[in-house]
Length: 247
Image (cartoon, rainbow, N blue to C red; front, side, top):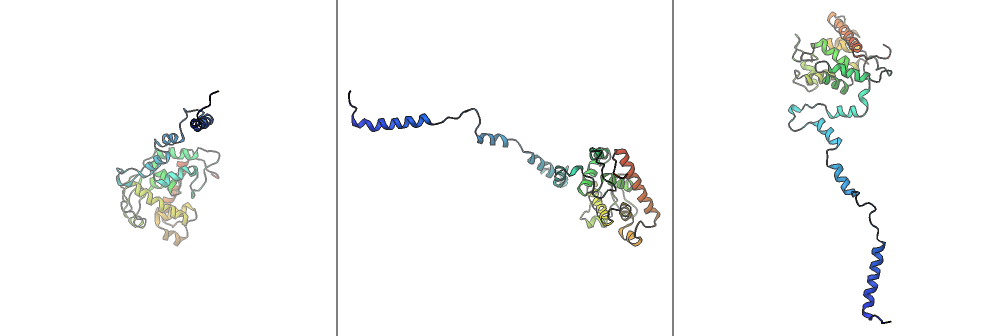
């Protein structure tokens, strides 16, 4: 047998080693599957749910006067599961036998003027939306430019003094008026320990009069106002099909 020149032996040894390395090198089992980097690109190509929610909550640069369909805290309240809770200060709680009671209330409110805004303001400030609607109906008949002989303005007949206390000046803006009036009503309900008669009397005659008489003042206007709001509140509950425990 002819012997190979010694100069070629290192080259053949290197070739053998490279052959063994490439023989044992693994290949992808399915080259059609995209790499992880490709998946990340496809997932981020379209706007995420958070991006869309942020846009809806904050609006765009062209949104007039800073008013949006709903605010970020509204969205947080809905997505946290709090949207179906009963208001903290209502006279009864939504019946657990009717899981669609909150939805029925919203559908009823949405048939009213400014119903969607009423529903959102009520949820934002933890006041029953049907109670809020009853107050608005008695106060202004849902007229956003109503003015009382005492100078109270708008849907909830908010006085300029109350508006100033809450940092609001344009009380004829229905959304501003709703927000301020709802916040004020919420504070009165808190101060009265959840007693709606006292809270409504304070809304009509002022907290000082309620404190002075330790209850609804003996004013015919105030007593008629409280009775009318509570009767309408009960009627709205019946029409909306909302049943409450203990009622």
